[in-house]
Length: 164
Image 1 (cartoon, rainbow, N blue to C red):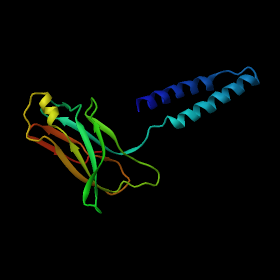
Image 2: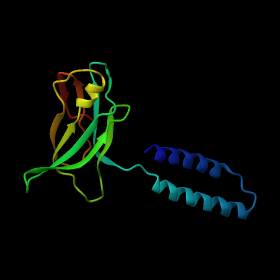
Image 3: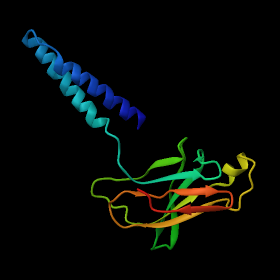
Image 4: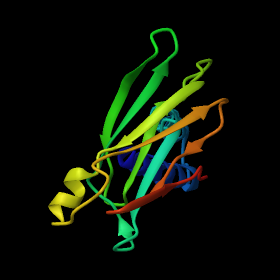
């Protein structure tokens, strides 16, 4: 994602330079058009991918994001009546995981999902006792809109809601 942002900024800078360049003859114009075409092609490949689900953990005992917490995404399979693990990711320095469930053209992510926040090590690393070694949040995705499912966390309590 950071690479895509860097590429997009660099492409914008090069496009501005190319457009403001004063052409003295036809050969410079051809070179500029080739550069412009290549930059536009790169921009298509540098677009950030879209995802339908994200999460965030805020540790309310410290008032800071909970970085380094593994979060597992599972989907309920009605045919087998079992949960299937889709991905396990770790919260970043801002306490976020922003790239669950890629939105692919024509595909639907409709279904029942569960985020499992594996909090035991987070509290253990801080020499804190916790009542919740993990937290499961079950929710339904019913359309193609964006879903943000954050939690606020303390050693003896948590809360969740559908964010935006």
